[in-house]
Length: 341
Image (cartoon, rainbow, N blue to C red; front, side, top):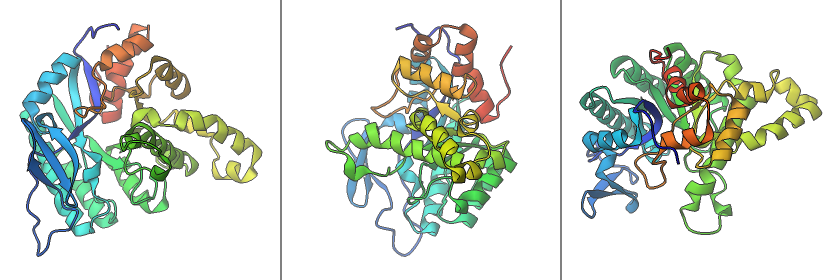
């Protein structure tokens, strides 16, 4: 592999788990209110509903350790967002709002400690639109976040579902970036094998369906200034697009539903480059366009890209195009000042 030749990368996909969770401010904590339990050295167990959901290391909450790793990975800036299971759409709305406010403030503390090396995407209780819009105001206007992370589904409903239209209108109006991450994917019962297959196979499937819902509902046509990105290279979307294009040609109802070609709409969305394969990344560049892909690592979990610049260098020979994927596309997605010369 080519080694990283600069320390200029922007990673738009990394996660945080707080070192502690607060006590519930109410008479009885929800059964799925998270807590931390001691594990082995520098690790803790995230306990949800009385079971260990995941064992995580101090890299999830230590700004110092994170920046040390960023330097080794060739990253100048990392975008932090909550571990997706903490989005808590399944909680009662008031409880979720309380938990997410705490998590958003923990993200803000990490950003403040980072000396400009971190920026954040907050979390919203999208199961209640009024609470979600209020928290969007808080994370953008008060905390100064670049945007928000949302799940690939909200209690089984994809981002393109009509009930989320007020959120996307507000995100566009505020110039907030929206990062869609896989969460509790559909079809888990079809996976045969260890639980980790949910991450390996279920996540990209759900992300592909989430992105397709954005195309089939013309979300980007209705909100042309919306900046929305999808994790895991858009999942299965690149493979679904040719079939969706042909279906639109064959079925008049689909052409009526999608005045613009889905492949054209797809080139207005953003995607991370987290696909672990050079030919696949090259295919995504051809399908989605050189201006729409960005570094994503899924740091600090075990299933993350440890050499993100090398992965792009292996797939892209042109140095100008490399710079887009490594830095400049992420600047556009996040609404940051461009360093493009």
